[in-house]
Length: 255
Image: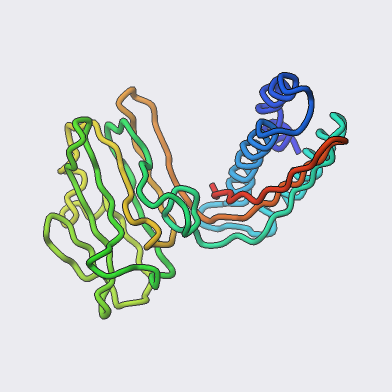
């Protein structure tokens, strides 16, 4: 409850200000606020439900149920009827919003000084395309020049990784894979290719891949960063006032 209240209070001042500016009725600011608060709550629920490498599904959904009750009460005091409906946690695509229809070419993190961890896990590799349309990962420097590229594809027999025009079979078709790009630097050359550069990491054709990624490191300004994706959940937001009502369905990535 303390954690849930903290997540909500961190956002409520902004939400209240937006509502005041928009005559206390439903508009896109309300939905944007709720979506952001719900994303934060989903992330908090994920970390609350994760111990080591173990994820407790029931703990996650119990957290969200409590959050849903709390935010519904909060908006009721403002004269709004609000309900949140959560679906099931599904494997996420590597697209920006985690859905197959999401943006396929996008930047994961910019202004990187050093990457300490970069892992990719795929339980379902059936989404991988062939070599003509591979899932690609690029490290691109501040001049816009790719300094490292990886292609991941299925040739019908094997799942292949291609780096610096060298191809490495890493498993049979439709088998799960687990890549540690930093750990395998003697093969993948990521760390050696990016040393001394400030760069970003981009995904291309990411609707052709489904799974988990985790990237940690240090930005050029000295701050540590973490970017990771575990699952995606479809959340339905229904909010109504005396004047109108809005129903939207939003993909929430976890974490």
